[in-house]
Image 1 (cartoon, rainbow, N blue to C red):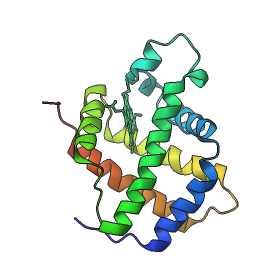
Image 2: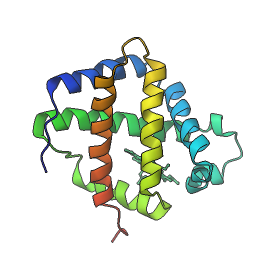
Image 3: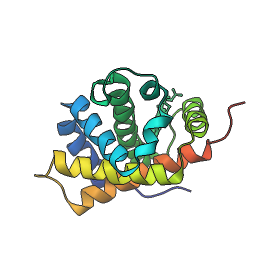
Image 4: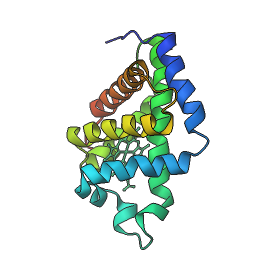
Length: 156
Ligand code: HEM
């Protein structure tokens, strides 16, 4: 279903992202440490954490997953404003859906990640944080997760 995502909402997401993206590594780590604090067992789902000998904080793949989440949420905000729906290239969404299905990611994980994402943004750009900004990020994230969940089935 199409949604209304306004230019103001897109601008709130982009304004905060343009500041935050200067330190994507720190940001990504902060975000995932919050997720693992709320859901410690989630660490075992990541193959690159299970098999790793380096401490969590030094794992480059964890940072890149976090940056994926943030960047894709920003892209979703732009798409929602332009078209009212998420149109990440279909094959990409299918791949992401299948990977999360296979890894055992649940609704609860997506919910924990949403809270962690919003807290991370609030702590990173407190000077411009507002409830409108929170809603804009929250809505773009929810719609992206909805699109991923539609593709959460075994890969064919
Ligand atoms: C893998 C994006 C949320 C756990 C991936 C990949 C992408 C991605 C692009 C790589 C896909 C591939 O290689 O096929 C996203 C986005 C999210 C999200 C955009 C939210 C909007 C989550 C959450 C969790 C999670 C909440 C769990 C707490 C995983 C796991 C993998 C993965 C376990 C596989 C890692 C591995 O073992 O290589 N995700 N993700 N993701 N994601 Fe997410």
